[in-house]
Length: 268
Image 1: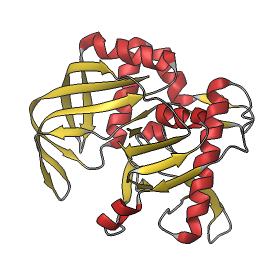
Image 2: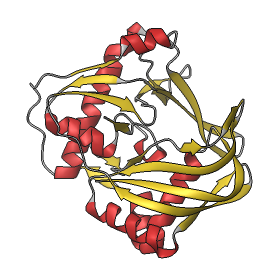
Image 3: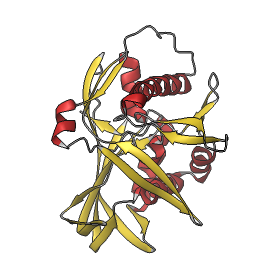
């Protein structure tokens, strides 16, 4: 289930590139307008894959589509309208977001210490594609894939895999597959058994050439004290060959990690 939410600003505003945490918070705020209990449950607990014991929020959202705007070094200047996509397979999440959107038809983004009001002008439900074993998608937000490894002190830490590094590419693709399987098991509450099905994932090489190999994004998600959460992600069209059920889960929930932070949202 997917929504496109379009808004207008009360006045021309500046939106920095690193707005994901603000939009992430605003989405929880919209859900909270419908149900404080469900918003808290989704934020604090989420859904659990009992086989892997991993937790997922099972939603994602796209980058902001800003218009008109002037792109400067730190963000988007003189923005008057924004729109974005929200995607989830969870009916309750979809329902509470819709009810929250129509509660008073506006929301706020806290950006660079300034609270910006957005008035919602249009809400559209967008139909899903026909899911097949081979699909081509474009990134509506970058894809991040992480693993855990030991740091120099021998302590486990989160590491974002680099698709452009040949030594990490196979691990990147394997983690995409395993992540989709875990989400499948979480949503359907059953063990995934089609492990022998073909799985291939590749970013478009012509696009990579066009961009001079620069398809990575380093996102500053959230700052707590002096510590900033940084996420390395990749943005390019891609091809996937896989079980259509896994393709559908990726489309609905997002590909890769950190989907509820606005990563891994894709479109046809």
